[in-house]
Image (tube, rainbow, N blue to C red; front, side, top):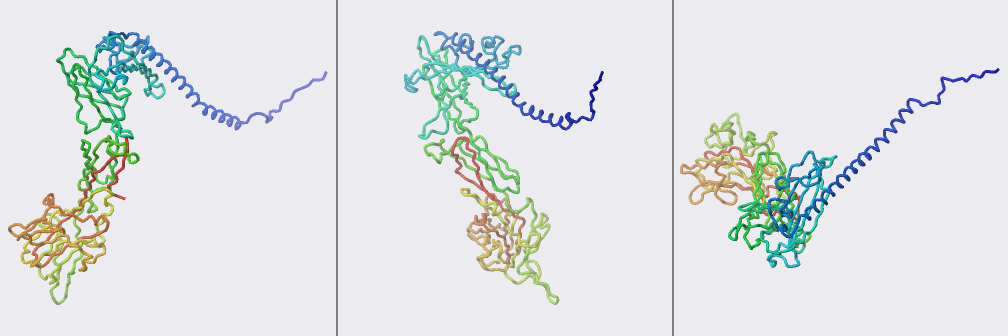
Length: 578
């Protein structure tokens, strides 16, 4: 008999290699990864739908339960016990027990959930409002505006995925008044937008929380679709009168700031009325070229004033929650109130380049000091003193020096660290269009003494062009800025507008300090916002002493016409800078 043997080759290569297995695993992983968000989304949708279904059932049951409790007797009741006043006006928030009924505590809704309830995450919001039906006229023609009520039940719960509380159900119904139509009195608070419609008409705001606090029982209500909160008030007798302060609140809106505190009186047989304006707040961002030191910005108008301190080198500030008064440029019929905001910027330091920068000890003189081998020198009157009068650095022109140059005008221009003219460049501080600005110069100290031998006015300080030469007498190169002159028989420092800066004392001395300049202004022409310039200081042998210390240049800005063009307008206002 033949025997057959089946052979097996261990070198057979028809199986899967390791690389092929890894590739297959990667493909499978990609498929699973791509599908995972779908699984998560499906779970989320299922959970959200389940929560929405439960919320709908709770809201529907609560609406039916409340309506079943209402009758002609308790329809207008405002009793504290909610079981006696199912349609008590106001806003109430509460939780449910394990049977889906409201949690009560001594007849009042409980604001704390029952952790053992399967509905502990579901929160109800019950809103009961009176409505002024236009069918029988509107206030003030309708003397009894409390016509019928609107009942709204909202149920919300937090998302299991994000934790964010989301409203899941919202049921609203109108509840007609049955039986007696005895008059009800109270107060009506109407809330309207600050911005009008295209015809200048007021726009009501629905859903504003209104609270009354004062000498009578407190009340809470929500404005209806007409922007009104009709709040009935019960009085123990005909002589009772309550005074209330009205507060309104709505997410994303502010009250008109120049509207005084809203007070209202509640009286028997009279329904008093107040209108309150609210609007989505505007934002104003102010940008400017930074200062060398701290300064203040003041924003005023519409019944408020805000002051912000700006740090050195800061270039912008944002004001939030502003009343958006203004006019719609595309539709002038739409506007928001009267008035506008004003902005003022305290004088900010624009020169020198560094805060507390010392007075330059480098200077160019004309005539220059001349030295000879065979005769005495001819010296310019100007010299730098590092500790003048024991106070600090100063430049002094003294006629008491020996060998003074006979020239009647001794000139000095400051030089920078590279021995070039100290050029002042304020172009980046030039005010933007519509902005008012003013430049002022403040000397830490500037003084003269023994100048009575002067025969006429003498110009002490000039302002020159960037390229003006020190020896130039061209009036187009150098413009007089400060002079010494007689005014009403007394010598005084006079500015370019012929105004007195500082008069001499009885001992014939004139000393101008930074403290004097709080009342006396050394104004610099606004033309210097547009061109570079430099200072020149002159003295004469007829002036025994003329000195000056460091000086600063400040700039102040203002505008009186800041308006917005729509609610929630984010306006950017450029003051200066490139």
